[in-house]
Structure formats: structure tokens, C-alpha cells
Length: 475
Image (tube, rainbow, N blue to C red; front, side, top):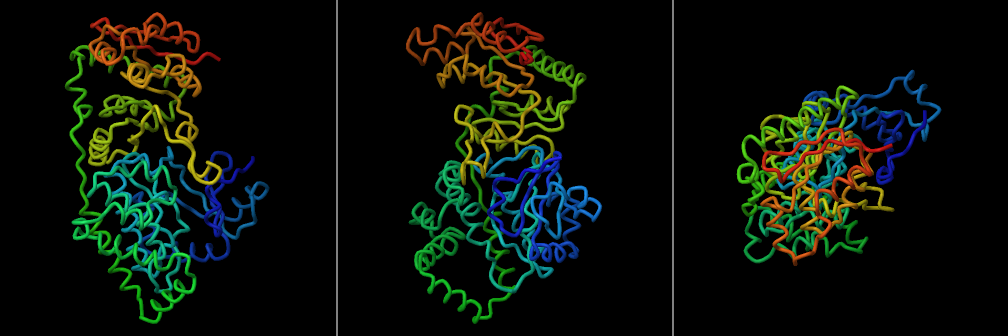
């Protein structure tokens, strides 16, 4: 057995996440171990573990510690074992509704902790992950014994939760590019520059953006001023009751935020596409039966549904797999899917927003704190339905590169070919100069596919312009 340390874990000097034999562990230093005992003794912690709001966590006993002894990176007094999240995602891949629900979870847990004499030292959006449509808090050592002062995670919460939500709700500025471009989120000064004029009268903007920005500018780089401010707070009798009231007010601000994107034709694609009802039924049966056939050979742990649209095929896939990651570039469509899955209490399908021609890269220190999308966990099968023509004809990605990308995962593949004679193929080609894509032909596609995969099965839909392929990578 060998152990590897989580690259992002260095930010918290009091605890370290590491992996051994496929399991997730966290070593706690002396102070963190004391905070863990205080947390484990509370009434609320067992409740939030049971209902899934906090990731499954247990402390190892002496026998388990001895088993790990040889591979422990350090001799910690306490080692926790965590439930493994099916797929790690990041806030710059979430919809507005997802980020808001993650923020509400964070605030609710903080309120419960404050009621029992604890607080949270962080306010980081990355401390929330997902089981399907259920947000789950993963940074257990964030809970610490309270000294009665203000919430030290407030700035972090504003930068990675509140400010991103405010700019999208009030200015229609998508937060994802900002969070992808800066791991620490949106600064108070940046938020202030985007929220001005009449925005100041909107709930929460004056206090959390304007005043926060002014105070931040005053204290920035001024250690004496910062220390004086902390002393002033202490001498003013800042109490836990005041912190509770502040958290309650922030929660109401977040809960009241709304965002409605412009109508998207992709949201109604299943109803407006050129498929006949019979073709939809044949396509669904193909996906269902093929995933079932692969499952009979070996269980499918994870399936990616690339270009998932409304999740029709994600729902089929989850019948055969432990979990599904449903990815699409249209936020409105993914947000609708998320809200439907949330209402269903679905814990197996994770919807994410991502441009597949520009997937999430590695960011942070040495580009390893937040991993690239394609390296986080290998899928056992990939659905690529009604997508290739968009990658090839809209984004100009050559067919060999598309198939090389899919081959690189070593996963089963269900892929759909849309012919140039198809109504959608004609439409996309009409937007390009004549002769731009001479190699976009089915015989070329099939040859390239067969060079990289063994084709297990193919089926031509009734229109004659769309063909489904089930394939397994060549060894």
C-alpha cells in the first residue's frame, strides 16, 4: 500500500488530505484534533452526517491507524477517513442555482455550529462538492472552537460565493470565467467596479460590496491598521450573537437572489429537433441496451454524458452506472436539469456547465490545486450523442483529434454521426464557405473510428442521415 498527498491540501497547515488504497484520509495536527473532538461531541454533527450535508467521516481507531502506519505521511494524533465523492467538480463548472445552493449549505452549517459554540474558519466555495444534485460539505477541519469573534471566513465567502452570485444576478455577468481565472475568487474592489449606480440600493450590495471594498482598500497592506481594526472589534464587545445575526442576514440575501438567463433553444432541443418519435425511441433503446451489455461484462462506475442537453440519456445511463457526469455548454439547459434533479432528490447525476472545446484546465499552485476536467477520474463509458458535428463544423476541430480525445480515456464509447445531408448538418455547413470541410464524410469518420476502436455495434436511424456506433478502444 502506498499513500499520495492531495496537491491542494497544503493550504491548510493544520490538516492534510491523502489517499491510500483507493480511500480518502485526512491527518489532523494537535489543534485540529482538539477541534475535531469538539465537533464530534456536538448534537448537530451526527445529524448533518446522516442527512448527507457533510461528507461521511469517521476517526480511525488504533488498529486502523496501525494498519496505515507504514504509509502515513506524518504521525498525526488523529486520522479521519472520508467517504469518496463520485466526481470532483469546481464552482466555475456550476450553474447559478448550484452555486447559490452550495452557499446556503455553507451558511446553514455555520449557523448550526455557532449554536453549539463552534465556528468555521473558512468560507471557500471549493469546500462544497456534490452527490448528484445534493451539495455536500467536505472540509470537516473547517469547524473550530469559537472564541466569540467575527466570522474569519467572511471574506472568502464573499469572494467565492456572494460576489459571483451578485454580479450574475444583478449585472448578467457570468461568474464562471472569473472563478476559473482566479482561484481566490472576485475581490471586493472588482465586485465594487461591477456593481455601481442603482445596484447600491439592492439588498446586500452596500454592506457587503461597497463598505467591504472601502474597508479592504483602507486595510490593504497596512498591518498596523488591520491590527487596530481587530482590536477595535474585540473592545467593542463583538459577540457570537452578532455573528449569528450577520450570518442570518447574509443567508437571506443569498436566498433571495434570482437569475433568469435569456431563453435558449437548447433547452427545448428534445422537442424541436428533427428526430421523429420512432427515432428517439430507437436511439434510447440503443443507448440503454449497449450500456446494459457492457455492464454485464464489468460494472460501470462512472459514465460521462458529453453534450447532455436535458439529461435524457444521462437518466438512461444511471440505470447501468454508479454515477453520471452530465456536461453541456448551455447554462440555462443545465440549470433546468439541475433543478429537476434536485426536486427528484437525485444523488447520482451531476450536471456541469462546460464548453467541451475549452474544458476546465488545471489551475492554482503549479496548476495542480484544481485538476483538469479530463484527469480527475477516468470514465468507464462516454456518451457522445449529437455532438461530433458541433465540434467539427462549428468549432473546426478535426475529426481525427476528436476521436483521439475520446480514445485517450480508454473507455467504452457511444457516438452519433450526423451526415452533411442531415438538416442540422446542412445548417451548420451553410454557415461556412463552400468546401471548408471536405473530409467531413461518413466513410472518413468510420475509417478513423475503426483505427482507434473496435466497433461493437452500429445502427442507422430511419432518416438515413444519423448513425449510432458503440465502440471499445483498441488495446
